[in-house]
Length: 68
Image (tube, rainbow, N blue to C red):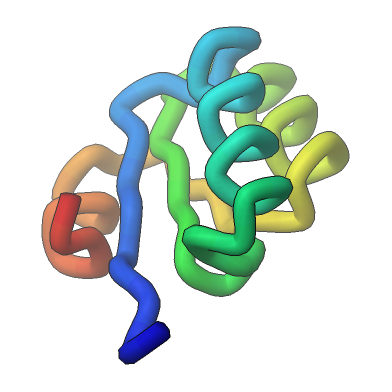
């Protein structure tokens, strides 16, 4: 496979976490290819702990990082 895509999520809750895990399990992306934004710190911590991916409190960070 060529270069992996960069995927961003607006919101880092259970749905984003489930999707991120699924994308990683299929080999589509690795944790470093994902980012989620959530203004609720606990949601960002949950997303990071479950996926190992990056989080931010700011949506513009997701837009700057992600292709999808």
